[in-house]
Image 1 (cartoon, helix red, strand yellow):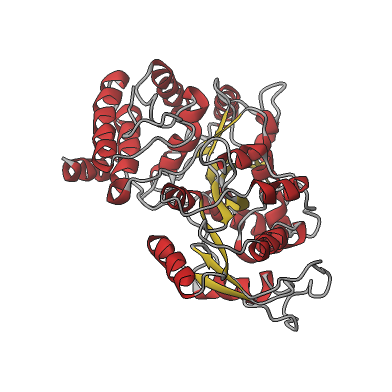
Image 2 (image 1 turned 90 degrees about the horizontal axis):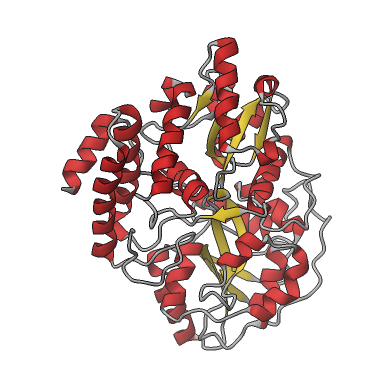
Length: 452
């Protein structure tokens, strides 16, 4: 059945299966390194009593690992042995290090989903005391909430994030509906905005990355569904979901047909094939590098249930079996300093997780996107939605069903409820096969997660 469905999706529309990842790697301290123009400006107070082993599933490529070791960690007053890791072997690596040296200072840096797996293996210690010491950093409440893996205790400190935001050509601003504010734009206003442009210019100005390597499945999972249903899976076929697809069917009338072949939105924006687009921050940087004065980035729209958004969040944690936590805590302090958060953004494309830093030193290409990411994450009625967790080899099929739902309803005009019922059954089959728990914004602890 899965093979038949996958083929059907590929025939219906160029389907995407790749998930986003900003990967990056780090540094063994070289205080004398003068490669960065900011060298010598930052001084960190505090010194570890021993070397620290930093295990990270992020920044794995050789070039990014070099930036971590030689630039990001350059001003840390101690030796950090940065060890990029595959998430599949993270737990094994932790156990191996502690078996060899029970007093080793170990810090773990990983995506939220990787840390959830470690938590479920009872491999992480609560670090509420570290968070309390750093709370003046101004961590977004929406992101900090995610680190309470049992709903109560903090198991990791937010480290860095990527996300998906909106970008508009400033030419489109003249057609905004009266009273519309980009920072609090609603989905209804987005439709009216697109309609205004179409009626006055004949242009279908809205664009989505729905091509073969695009990330439009994340738009449905992390933005549209949560904004209209406060769910990404449990409410997949409910009444609110039906209204959501009715809305999107109307919006699609003003979407550039080329969206079906766009894998990224930077080139269509620069070519002015579209004036308004949604995409991953990494895939939008080019727009602001080439024409920073012509475009503006802004948060995703707000729906009836709030502003759904999908943070690709990485955190810093300490293994439960580690007897030494003071040195890793010092490194956490360093990595969440505003100067180092900005340095990480410049070097790797990962955005800050706190509002304590100044973006004044950032290039325009990053400053505009950084502002949109921050506004999106800190909005009072945001609905944070995690990347799917615990789906194993079924992750690609899971994504495919969201795109199949899109192609059947929007492109083929099939009955909405019939499609939702059929595809909900297939999604439930995947959840059952993996015995997977729900992930935010769905909060049921039942395993497997159940679609209503």
